[in-house]
Amino acid sequence: MIGMDPAFVAGATVDGAVLRRVWRFARPYRAMLAAFLVVIVAAALVSLVPPLLFREILDSAIPDEDRGLLHLLAALIVAAAVADAGLALAERYVSARIGEGVIYDLRVSLFDHVQSMPISFFTRTQTGALTNRLNTDVLGAQRALTGTLGSVVSNTVALIANGGAIIVLEWRLGLISLVLLPIFIVPAKRVGRKLQTLTRQQMDLNASMNTTMTERFNVSGALLVKLFGRRSAETADFATRADGVRAVGVRSAVYGRTFFVALGLVGSLAAAAVYWIGGQLAISGALTIGTLVALATFVSRIYGPLTALTNARVEVMTALVSFERVFEVLDAQNPITDRPGAVDLAAVHGTIELDAVHFSYPVDAVVPSLEAVSPSTAEPADPAVVLHGVTARVEPGQLVALVGPSGAGKTTLAQLVPRLYDVTSGSVRIDGVDVRDYTQESLRAAVGVVSQDAHLFHDTVGNNLRYARPEATDAELMAAARSAQIEDLILSLPEGLDTLVGDRGHRLSGGEKQRLAIARMLLKDPAIVILDEATSHLDAENEALVQEALAGALAGRTSLVIAHRLSTITAADQILVLDAGRIVQRGTHPELIAEGGLYADLYRTLLRAEHASVTP
Image (cartoon, rainbow, N blue to C red; front, side):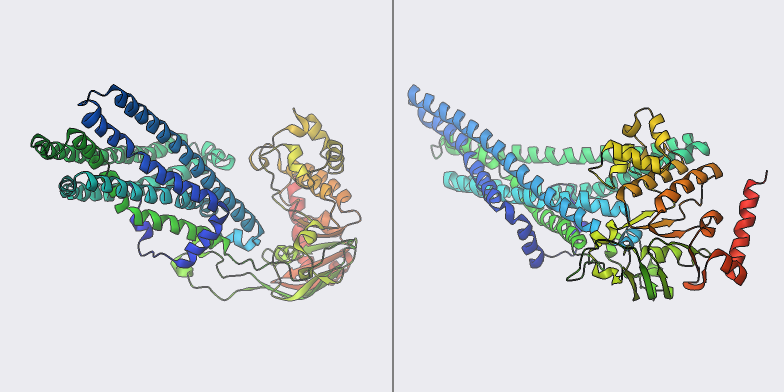
């Protein structure tokens, strides 16, 4: 494969463990792989037939004026052509079945494994690099089992078959054709190296151009360009990048064409040499005309396979590197797994207990090659302790507010309940059982979360709601929407539940997205609810609607609320005040106001801020 970059596999060696694992992945397709190899060999052998039949026509049928033999040989040539076409179609079909099957297996395995990874994996991983593993590297792995394997086998068989035919027919002419090989292979390798350089440039330029489009064509990027009046500048910048892609594309096309022109030229020179020397042998009677024509055909067929095989190592190693990169993600260890004997969380009462909880965010890379690590941070630092010995108890049905300055550990504490992270020491218990002793699926089914920036998929209103319960009817969706104070909005939309919400819900306001997220949470019907600053950035009107929706949503449920709004805080059954990862105060609003301290200071600050926001 001309243009494949050997620098990509520099220093790589064939790892037996990788090969064995590749075979385990390909094993379900072993019957098809065997059929694929048989078809390739059969196609190579069938390709030998036409030149030999032409030889018989020239040497026997025509000189002997044997029309019957001529008809038979012509029919056999047609049959060989039909067989060759049939084998080509069979090869493509089997190749596609194997390739697409491997792509399916790898992608599903990768997607499922990545979905199971903890949140810390996604906070550190470059999304583009991760999706690249699901696309480019999976395709590279596919080529290992079809393109690369088929190329190596077919070119080897073709070289052996055509070389053998040349030796059998006239070995001296075969030696003459070999003399011309350096004339072709040396320039071909130079052209190949140049194409490899151009391929790298083309990939880099395309990546840069695609990044520009991705960043500018989402809602936030497009809005920024318009607000700063940068359309002309962005177009000029994009045109520069596109011009670089165009220039490299032209050079790559010329060099690629040069390679094939050189291949044709050397083939013509070889054919000329065979006809010149072979013609003299034919004139002297040492060689028949038919044999001469067949030899010229076979000689022209050996240069392509030889050239392809000179690059076979790069192709094989590139394919194996793709497999290694896929396996690197599949082998990533998930630190949050179900314990042996984990039980389902059923009949939830809603008691939450935090027992001497200490927590530090993980610092070790899960998949280092997917994380953007600068040289200064290449060595992992000691993990900073975020929570220090936090102990608290939340009774069933209680509303508990978590307050404190930014960075106090409120969100971190809330994330330990659905086990998005595991505690470093201590324990988090629900209904008296450590959350690590529950299955993750049942635990998270019992906990509903509405965050500050509710995420909506680029789909319909109905499908975003059904994400919580796919089997829900339209009537159930509207009932949840009614409880979340968003029914009237849905009814006013042009297509109701079938209305698209746009990328990340950008067609809806912040308050509308929040109420839709609350409706989705209500459909889930969790026993425990976590609200992470769900109303902090809303205006007074939207906040009132969301607060009304929350009042119904939280009724009868155990609730942890991270809030910056006084109305939410003062209504709490219990307030936990965090500072630097420790609970420094706890109690009801009147108790904490009377006590003074950090809570009273925070309350006065919030009171002034809310008063200022409503003062004209």
